[in-house]
Length: 213
Image: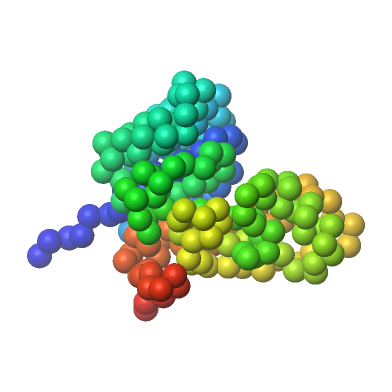
C-alpha cells in the first residue's frame, strides 16, 4: 500500500512572521499532520520571519521586491521559485505584495490568506494591518475577527474557508485589538485551514468552500 506523501507548504512573508510562528508551533504540536512547511519565501532579506524559519530548520529563500522593476517580473520570480520546490499549498502570512495573475493561475485554489476581519467587512484594497482594526473601531462594531480564504484575482475576495469572531472591548486601541484578533482567531484558524487543505478535506464549487468529514 502506498502511503500518501504530506503536502508541501510554502509560507510567504514580509516581516516579523507571527503567523509563520503559529504554523511552526502547530506543526510541532501535531496539529498539521498532513502538511510539512517546506519553504519560507520572503520579499525582504531583513524580515525577522527568516530567523524564525532558521530556528525551526526550515529552508528559506529571499525574492527581494526591490530587485524587480514591475509587479509582473516579481510575480514571475516568486512563482518560479515556488514551482521549483514542488509546492502544493502557498500561505500568505503577512506577505505585503499583491502578486499578478500568473501566481493565482499557477496555484489556483491552493493559495490561502488570513485577513484580520470578518470578510466582507473591512477588507479589499487598502485594508491591511492596523488599518483594518482602526476601521473596525471607528465604525463601532462590537464583534470583529479573522477570515482564512482562498486567494483569487479580487483582493480579499476569494472563497472563505474559516472565520472566527472576536469581541471588541471597551478601551480597545487598534494595537490591542490587533493582538487579540491574532491570538484568539488568526493563530487558531490559519493552521486549521492549512491542515484541512493538506488532508484533502476542502473543495470549492461556485465560489463556496465545502469541508468534508
